[in-house]
Image (tube, rainbow, N blue to C red; front, side, top):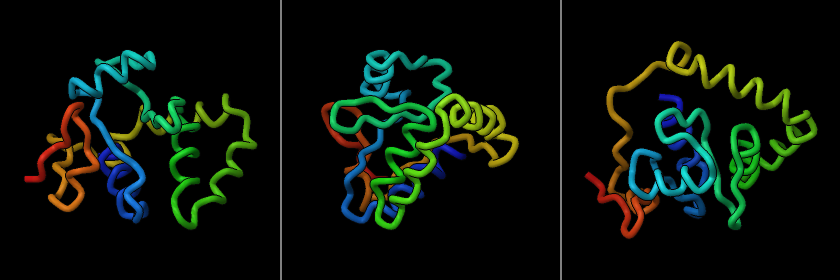
Length: 127
């Protein structure tokens, strides 16, 4: 639920449709995961690829949120040592189902945002 909530939150704030999303369970997502050293079976992180650079854990959150309108202030968290930020990220990741709930299915994108979800060669069709 947290991952779907993360995507929904970014989509709502990203009015210029700058960001695209891919699930690691898709062939394209698996290939990206392998390229960046993310375990396909147990990803334990959101990743952001911006300008060809991979960002992980708290760096990914800061990189994405700080590029959304009105959220530049999030960059201040970059002053906190990465080890501390990532430790907090790991606590949230480990407890996400307990704190935020779990859904049986991943979010199916609405038709108006379906083009933002990548599978590789084509975008996911809205259903």
